[in-house]
Structures are given as structure tokens and as C-alpha cells.
Image (cartoon, rainbow, N blue to C red; front, side):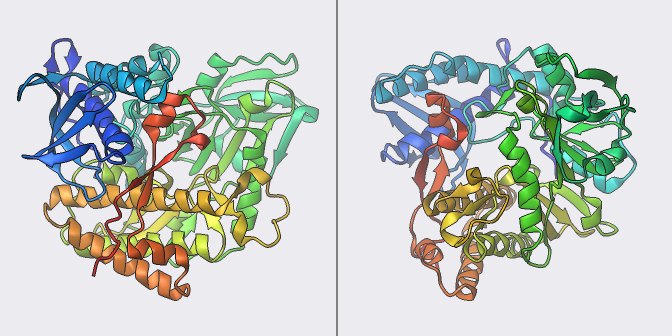
Length: 532
């Protein structure tokens, strides 16, 4: 169930598959974030046609699958309307220029980085297509964990609703050694930190011992660091000592900076001063303390059967200015305690990246949503916990017949608390974890319904055309059952009545060059509203 990558064809000097993927991503962002809210898009003769009203231009792209949320699957080139009924193909670079002109006129602000980032993301995909090994170079022989690693490292095209999903700052020759899409494997680098400069919490040393770290000098403790980070931010503090590369092999996951050690069954979430999608991927001190505080808090709250949390029980960093965020490291618990013989854990994003063809898609979907939806909605509305359950934050466990039997939620960085549902703020939880009710609703609705379930539903519909309305009706029934169990809270009643869903506007936040937390949300159609 990994993303299929066929051998690329070429148009001129550009890989055609890479260029089409980049163009479809940009086109889809414009549809979702600009044209749909402005009623400037329509479906005509099998194509989505939109207007860039501020530069008086028309664009179109053929639609292979119509999505009720407007998240269509596109095929073939994006085209620019000329005089009359004539159309001409445009590549991703030219499309980015047109969108940049529209956004400049629309917002009154320029972004001179945008078109270069779209082209760089496309070129990264082309390089990944060309250089990706056919086989995993370092399999463990454990079917479940090898399948999991493959799922994390298979997302060659990246986020389908981001204008530059594979743009990464820094030298391409350097990041290539650490790219998950290239099935990379490497060892952590280690620092020896004097005891009086260590800031940590939780059982860091007992957990990290499974990684086979080097022995530090007396009066020091070890700190694992991403090797790319040490190249980007060499240790400037005179009392920090490099111990070199050591330990068990590590596999970068889809997030790039979080590494997994199959042998130790342990995740290491490192700081990495690289901008990936919208964020510079560094661990601020409050994010380190939040991980441990939320692990302790959430461990005391009930989870539905079949759903579990990958906890983050320990962190360590350097308690010195300039080194704190550079080397902050979080340890996350592994997969084996949640697996039974014959189970296969897969990143949910992998399931959504290609047509998904179970033998009985309706029964498969029922199992899927009955696990995930109650866990996320009850966590929010009953316990005030906002799980950021988007496709990259959920590991799906399939049984030997390929049916979803468990869901593992991960990455406490995105987990927040709805402050309106906590009468007394929990001790030890930093205030940055608080969401107001509007932000809580937006994150749950976007991550669960728009990002996650719409992606999985679309993948099922790609394999079985015409099935999507039935799947949405089934999802409505599950949401209605959760609402009844919770006493019909107004948030779910509004969704069932048809209140629009919301989507994070990745194009607009990238254009504004804002932090990810400042991303605006745009309304999208609600396919479960009013269904019977």
C-alpha cells in the first residue's frame, strides 16, 4: 500500500511526473483557497476551470475524480486560456508566476521567493524519482517494522495541498543523504554535555541506552543530534564535545527530522534548522517540556479500545543560550507494544497517496472511521484534548487480512488543550498548549475531516469510482452516533446540519511568509451535512 512511482518521462529538461505533481498541487491550492471561496471555479466537460480575477486569466485542468470538498484529483497539464477557446499548456514554473501575479495584485504584497520555491520543490521531486533505490538498503527482516519504515519513506510527492511540499532550504547535495524518500539510513551524532549544562526530564538515559550511545567523559551526559544539524549549527559552546557518529542505524521518517530506530523500537525527534513545508523544524524549550507534561497528563485519560498514543516521556537539551533550541531532543515510544502477530503498521499518509483497493472498501472504511472518529471527537469534546490527527500524525495498524484494527496517534507538538473545557489548568503544562474554542474546532475539523478522512476516502474512490457518496453517508452515521453519546454537543450538531468544514490555507501562509500557527483557514463544502 505504498505510493507507486513509475519510471519518469521527460518534457524538455524537466521530469514530467514531477512537473505535473507540482502543477496539480499549486492548481489545487488555488482552487481551495481562492477560487472556491470567491466562486471563481466551475466543472466543465471533465475539467476544473478557474478565473484569476485580478490578472484576468483563466486556468483549467482535467479532473480524474471529483471531490465533494473540492479536493479533486487532477490529470494532465494545467492550461492557460488564450483568446477565444484556445488553451496552452503551462508548466509548474509558469503556473507559479501566474499565481504570484494574482496574489501580488490580490494582497498588495510581493513574495520574491515563491516561484523559486515551487520550482525547487518540483526539482526535488524529480531528483527523488531519479535517485530513489528500488529496494530498502537496510531491512531488519521484521516484516511489520520494515513495512512501517517503507511507508514513512515512500512519500515522494509530499503534501498534495501545499504549493511547495518538497522545498527544503540548504544545499541539495547535503540534504540528499538524509532524505527519507531516498530510503536513507545513518547513525546519530552525539554530544557530550557537562552535567551542569544539561536540562532534561523523564527517563532519558534508560531509554537512549537502547540506541547504543558512546560512553561520555566523566561528569558529562550524552545527547543525540541529527548529523545534518551539526553541519548546519556546529557547537559553539566551548564545553560541548563531539563524540562522533555511533549507535544503531536510524531511519528518517516522513517528517525528516524525526528518526526511527527499528532495532531499538524508539523514535528520536531532533531539532533541525531546516524549513520543511511551513516551519523551521527546531524544538523550542516549551515544546520539550510540553512533550513530557502532556505524556503524563494524557496517560491518565481514557482512550477508546483500539486507539493508543505514542508517548514522549523524555527530553534533553543544552541549558545554554544558542544551544538550547539547536540541540533539543525528544524521545518517543515505539510500535512493538501495540502490535500483535501478523499486524502491519503503516503511516496513514501512505494509504492516501495512491488508489486504495481493499476487497470490501465499505467494511474497511467502517472499521477505519469507527476507530479514529470517536477517539478524536471524544478526546476534544469530553476531555478537552485537541489531537492533531492529520495523515502524517496517525499510524494505522492492519491485521493479517489488511483490515484496520488499531490507530496510534503521535506527535505531541501538535496536541493542544481546549482551554474552554478545562476549569483548572493542569499543573506543569505550558500556556502555549492552550487553544481557544475557535482554534480547537478549526484544528479538529481540518485535521480529522479535511486532511485525513477526505484523503483516505479519495484513495478508496480512486480504486472504486462512484463509491465516495456511500462512504460519506457512513461517516455521517458515525459522527451522529458520537454526537448522541456526547449529548448532542452544538459543535457536532452544526457539522451534521451542514456547517462548512475548514481547510488550512497552505498557499496563503506560504505567500505571507508567516509562521505555521498563523495560517488562515478557508471554508470548504461539508459532505456529511444534511445527508441521510
